[in-house]
Image 1 (cartoon, rainbow, N blue to C red):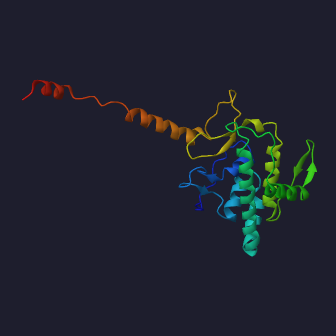
Image 2 (image 1 turned 90 degrees about the horizontal axis):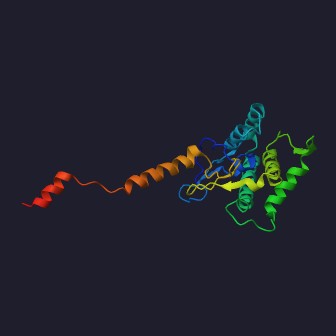
Image 3 (image 1 turned 90 degrees about the vertical axis):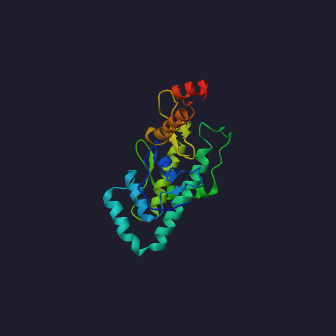
Length: 220
């Protein structure tokens, strides 16, 4: 999987937990698959874009990162572990798949969720688990709480997978008719329209030149 530094992907999932699992672009295409969280700086930038970190906290964490290289590397590994376990579980719950009768949380995901809860406070109303991220290991905890929030959400039955070939991004289909097909109409939707346009025009028969046909009928 490529880890070339690129801008953070669009937030199209409808929930931070889905935007997290969507930080693997072209997940279903091995030739184009790309990790959009290649390093700690990209991770912090993405968290800020997703609204999980304010600019001041992001700057403080990045400023402290050079003094803790192993800790920041472990933070990225923990976030990737959370992301992949979450994707495996959530992908099995999409409307495209036969829903399992019993959902078993992967042990790795359960450990990350429990660690996040131990470090969090239950505040409200409404009562929710809250965590202030003021150190590097708080980042995967903060994201784990988002995954837990989604898993407990009444909107979970709206979970869908993009129909774009090779895409694999997940989203909540909040359209009135619940017929959304694409992660984004400007991304996979446009690509599909372009593909159909190309196929339609490619398959149209070419019209012969009438003058040439007349000459052929007349012969030499």
